[in-house]
Length: 166
Image (cartoon, helix red, strand yellow):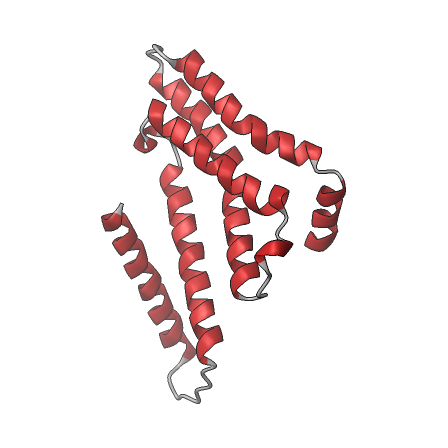
């Protein structure tokens, strides 16, 4: 099954996906009500970690898909699929705001991995977009390992700047 076939299937049957993204903020809100006043922070941090991953993975995928479609495929905004491209991002934003109101992100196990993953994706898309726009053709005698090291150092610099920014 290709992504195109999966998206066509979801477009034909949108309710399961729509219910998932509509119910996720509701589940986070109910979890917040149940966890209020509890002293077992470790247990609730793991519950919130599951919720964060359940909503952030499709949300980050939707953001990445949107950036790819708009920057590289030049898709019109009128051609967007609301269920696949907007609803996951809105649900992720709302769920993360509800979670942040109940527990700091620093207490959620693995939350730093998600922000690092998002930074990596953003850096890669930025570099790809830059090279797509400049149409650079270079013949060089620089070894490929030096180029890879330069790319990794650029990613580390972006990660350092991101951590200082937030």
